[in-house]
Image (cartoon, rainbow, N blue to C red; front, side, top):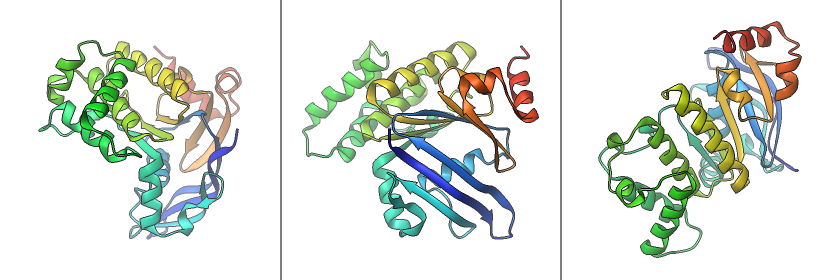
Length: 261
């Protein structure tokens, strides 16, 4: 598999010289499911924002290289070009998908607008709606006509998170970033969502980068885990090896905390 994303000696600092990410080196393959774990302040969110071009360049200094599709040096092109590439190829699932959805518009309108906007060809509304219903069925919805007529606040947290997956699929993104998407869900719905996201990612051939403070969550979905602490990668290995033979004391603490219950 080719690299779809790559960081080389990538650092992010505030203008006051406070470093948030320090000489990050990461290679991410096409269709890989990668986990990034670390406590609050470890640099996880800044790393995601660097990928999706959410960094405010008036506040941050970026050094090193970040490549998309092996040969596009993202921070060597204009901000406009970078954002266009991100918008076409990268999508994000947030901690609480209510933030991804317009509370004043029904689900049907939001999904339809997203599908039509990102469609590579001009399609009719009825064709788009048929495809949207197929996607809703893919993520486990049964009463689809009713779901389409509801507002976000009429759905449970777990249902909204499934809608968030459908929104991603409507964009035809190749790379999906998941920023602690199960934080607002109970344990049962957490693991239902994780299983669903893994299944959809594998079926659609997506590259998934899943960020969490909980290594137990990552162990259920990721093939490889990167451990971040204070902006540094302190350990990186397959999920099996990380859990079986963690080399860093901080990684051992994360595993202990996750299995304490």
